[in-house]
Length: 103
Image (cartoon, rainbow, N blue to C red; front, side):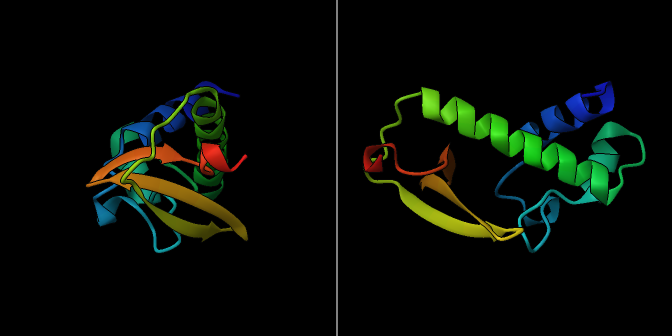
């Protein structure tokens, strides 16, 4: 992975999940917001690669941590034919991935 991809992944992690202007209708970060934050051109392909890697890293991290989902609500999105659950308590995103108790 090159330095630009690493920077894009870090930027994605800093985006405001409650700001619809940061994400496309399919749930991916917009190339415009990434370009603005990176101060460099970002293609859709570069965004998609960084987004996929970010999701994989988030899934690995969340599976290693015990998460209390009591009182949390989940939202399922379908991205490129893959289902993803995001868990919120109030407006705070607390977990990405399946319910750890369901395993």
